[in-house]
Length: 291
Image (cartoon, rainbow, N blue to C red; front, side):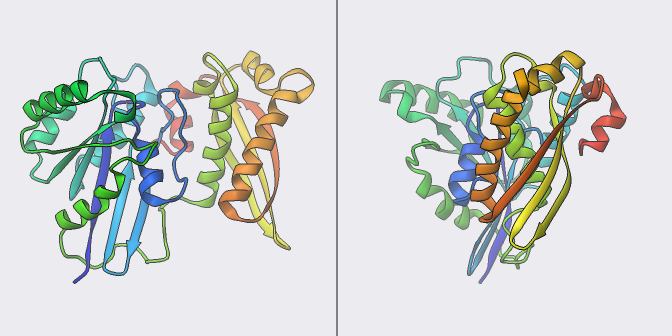
């Protein structure tokens, strides 16, 4: 008997969705930083056992979109509400903001199991945890609730067996040796973007998109040319930095990550170009993979 299905991970920004995906997959598929809106795309992570395939879907954090890019990001979330066999909703136990009523309403209506994961319990206490669990029992009565720490691995070993019990009998959707639906170039772009999120302040990380124009392997070395797009000339200067020091640091850090990911030597060239107001331009957004 083989089970397989789609498990979609949803929640607010910084709840820990990408950390959980990486923990369950045992691979770093999604970039993780403390900054909101780190995840911009919907990423599939394909978990395989002999009699099981789980297609995890990590989505951008649910927010009220303020501009075109955020609207496109929320389209990925809406797509994820159409095709799940199980939902994992991640809640940051320390989040004092208003819950997403949009998400609560959808999950109450959808006729599939919902597992609510109360995340970051290592940063809280028993009394707070019990209050949060009671609150979410009231919001989504049908959901099963599990307190976890995705970062510390607390109770995450209980998630896969629980999902296996909930998924339908199906043949695998993907080849068993495939662990994601994304291309090699996608992971290059994300590795570079993660280092930009970590190394720059203010609006710079949110004004950046990365496109890999060359990815080719020759004699055991992967040669990569990637372009970092910004919205203004002043941002280009900041990304490059004094005598190119800032962009050099990003390149070194990204190359180290990519060599770990691909298990091969990497030769990485980075270029910075201006594409004015790309976040508000529908044609530019489509060219970057936002439908």
